[in-house]
Amino acid sequence: MAISFIRIDDRIIHGQIIIRWSTEYPCDGIIAVDDKAASNDVIKNALLAASTKKTFIWSREKFRSKMDEAVASSKNYFVITKTPDTMAELLVDYGLKVNTGILNVGPQSARQNTIQVNKNADITREDMASYERIHQAGYQIEFQLVPDFTKVRWSDVRQKLL
Image (tube, rainbow, N blue to C red; front, side):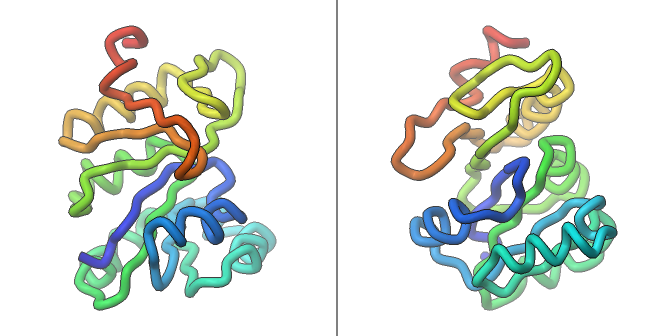
């Protein structure tokens, strides 16, 4: 399968993705799905500049129209979203299938009314609903900044939070 890694990260593309995660899970390119980034040339160009891989910055709709092509590709891609609601839309509503069955969650910065799940993983009630949708679709959700940091699984904390 061409989608080798899926991640939610509020910074979308940055050094940890390019240096750490792409070493752990080799990839040919990155598909970032974020409506704001896809429609803002300044943000889009900053994300493209942060990547040494073939990189696409797509809106949700563009991803939906290209999803089957990306999945069927002979290349391996990461799919990264900024928010859990976008990832839930891709995995649950659009039916994106990923062989690993694991969703990695990186930084989710503290905001108003957030609960800390792991270091730099602060989530809202709305986020929890998205994570639960993804969990119910059969994905294992792991909050982990980089490969050698402690991971916290949604399945271990969900009952305390919901």
